[in-house]
Image 1: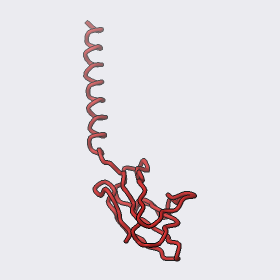
Image 2 (image 1 turned 90 degrees about the vertical axis):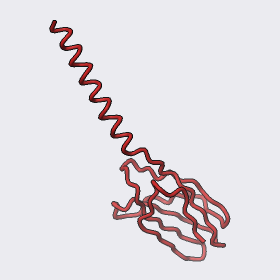
Image 3 (image 1 turned 120 degrees about the vertical axis):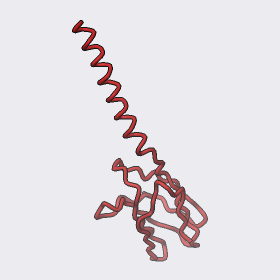
Image 4 (image 1 turned 180 degrees about the horizontal axis):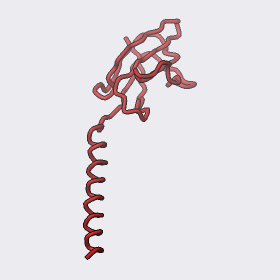
Length: 114
């Protein structure tokens, strides 16, 4: 009888844990992938993004590349924090710097600089 009781209790506990895990994943089923498009007529030399909870910019998303005008790049903004709101900073070859605040990467599919 004890073995059956423990087996039933274990199955109930496991089911409860699975429901809790599924609930966590279901609550954050967001796609944080966006296309960043440069339509400015000037080459973008650096692009930084950080979730709004950070006090500093993340790494340059272009790395050793540049983003020419009329081109786009796809970025996954999932930094593991479940943040949806990000700040962007784009630096261009002519010295211009454009920033954007509170971009919802969970709702938007693209961001265009023009």
